[in-house]
Length: 225
Ligand code: ITT
Image (tube, rainbow, N blue to C red; front, side, top):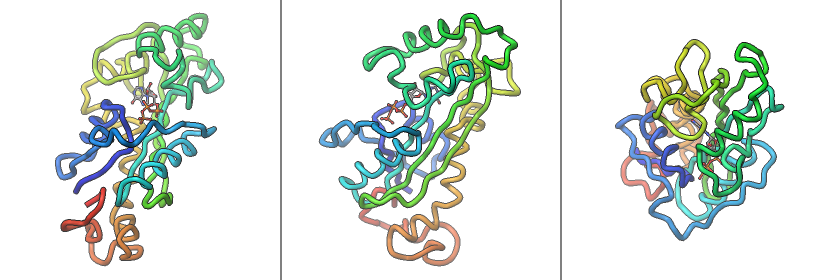
């Protein structure tokens, strides 16, 4: 199965690839420099995921998946939220974003509820400019006192998921990719994929009969084969 993901974030692509597993070939927008940057003008993860999925599915055939995600911190009233990628300015590094966030929660005690945070991911699936479905995943946790670990990306070095002492950046990738916001959203998407494939290729709900994803099989001229 081949999947097109409407992202230029190579870290997301890698995680999505690992979560889907070897039966799927995940392609992002690397091979499509002609598709310009999509302005994330929505007011929610869902709106932004839809904007990205719609824009890319107008340019590429078949099913297109877009991921909009970010970190919501209790002490910051849910910030950085949908601004996660741009929290410290458009060209800032992960280190600078983390430093800004830690400085904003510096006075919040380690055990305070105010240090609680969650990662949220919304996936939107679209075809020919129409959104077919959205799926959400959330992982709850808290903000560490200092960055720890080198795996993952973004805010992983300061996010400790519930049930663990380690940050996402200290945990093995397999662990993050089993419990993360992205993993939860992808599992929901996977459960609906046969139906979505069927709808995308005119087979109707149920994927054209039988299990699996027949509408997506065998040489479809599509982003999702
Ligand atoms: P695309 O829009 O091209 O997909 P992006 O990085 O701009 O890439 P978003 O607008 O969805 O994507 O912003 C997501 C940001 O949220 C990301 O850059 C990280 O800073 C943060 N983030 C999301 N998921 C994360 C994760 O699993 N671990 C750490 N940080 C994450």
